[in-house]
Image 1 (cartoon, helix red, strand yellow):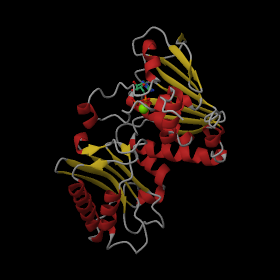
Image 2: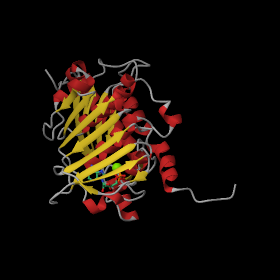
Image 3: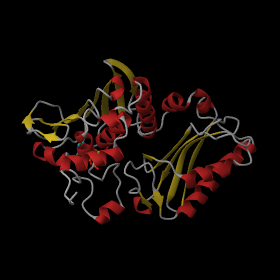
Image 4: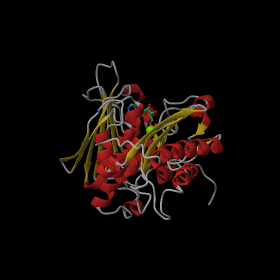
Amino acid sequence: MPIRQLPDTLINQIAAGEVVERPASVVKELVENALDAGATRVDIDLEEGGARLIRIRDDGAGIAAEELPLAVSRHATSKIASLDDLEGVATLGFRGEALPSIASVSRFALISRRNGAEHGAALEIDGGRLGEVAPKPHPQGTTVEVRDLFFNVPARRKFLKAERTELSHIEEWLRQLALARPDVELRVSHNGKASRRWKGEGDLLSDVRINETLGEEFARNALRVDHSGAGLRLHGWIAQPAYNRASADQQYLYVNGRAVRDRSIAHAVKQAYADVLFHGRQPAYVLFLELDPRRVDVNVHPAKHEVRFRDSRLIHDFVYRTLHDALAETRAGSAVGVAD
Ligand code: ADP
Ligand code: MG
């Protein structure tokens, strides 16, 4: 075959292979966009585990009608404009890939009304075929509708699991998010029935959300951690050693508000527990690490589950020291639980 330039739709479908694994990845990308737009409330309507419909509606800043086609173009973003911006990026998104990727593997609609605009507008894309922008009533904010995910990529569609499994992936991700953003109200409905609701409770991580996500027993055994130093802040809750798990199922780590997996930090936590946990048992925690965005590279993985720290050793030691000290207090018997 001669070398040829691939058509845009195919390029987007290839990119979708990286960011759109299953309905939960679509929910993640769309809710992240809502949060980046400053939403205080996000409604998530699902049908058939998201395979038939994912509809995300937010009350954020919205998109101007004339920018709708740009929003669904590849590598178009309002979040960064230069390498310098990329290095200090504080939004969840910045790659400009989610909407075009999702739109290329679904029947997609974007409806929005920009803050201050008189009317809303809509743009539909059917399996990558772009329609025309048309006026459509919409309150301030944005709705994204994703129907029949992977309808045009049979190989992918085949790999979707049972409705319940896909739904539980979505819920697991939403729980993670609800822990990090207690200020945002999230409502979920599935097949027309309200299924979950997290109220926007203010800026403190509330015990309610901890109870819901990790269970009351965790909450009763949790130690509050909040320590700053060397331009780093680590805060959240860690379980006292008496509360431990057979697997790493209750380990939530956020770096600048983004849920990530990080080997070095996981190792630091484990080390801190080394002499107080039985071999093979796992600690439970919800930890938030905050630092200057310039000290962490979030552009490591298309789905952004991983980050790279510029001074990884320092961060490892900071986490280890903070948790080791917090646990030392439990050994001295001065533990205080977060919930009575
Ligand atoms: P990214 O989030 O990396 O910028 P996306 O493809 O997810 O890329 O979105 C492209 C652009 O569309 C965003 O930069 C933003 O300007 C706009 N956008 C997407 N979703 C929303 C939303 N819910 N509210 C406001 N603007 C949005
Ligand atoms: Mg995005």
